[in-house]
Image: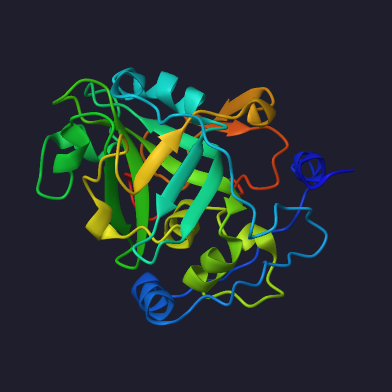
Length: 265
């Protein structure tokens, strides 16, 4: 069985969740200040693409993709490839497997935009096709894709992804040892942002051009039937089925109900 076929098969293997991580600013400074060894990341029993393999990409998604209802955008994001080219020249690529939609029409109290624009959430109000980044619990960055019409305030939180390219660099950014479970890289919104080197400085960054882009799924990455369910870790409107994820994926984060904050996107 080839590496890609093995990776597709491994998405259906159930694994446990484990803690991990380090402050994102320290990890980024360590990475940018050092030199990459060039050694391929070795994840035991995973069959992931080797770190030296370049992922083929289709042309980036256009603004019209994002200028729609956030629930439609969320469903269509599953299987898409998010790519970030660091200032050091390293390219990091992941395949999205879990996202959450947040509405901007006034019916979703869990959305950051529910009470209108603020200095913190201004990016949510458009234009669509930009990244909205915010800090959670004062420690970790989470990132969202801005959707809908300009001024609406809709977004999709990027919750989890399968790592495809740049695994060793992701591990450095996450502060993980070689023997750490691969699911610790990008399983969960804060881990995903940290593994891709995304911080508050990327708030408002265009996804249409430049160093950060979203690409449609490759033929072999078309998702299995997409499932929906309640959003994770929020205390308001938590029963709305606006979480979209690839059923059976080992990279989908563990579900938990409720949370310390009422809004996640």
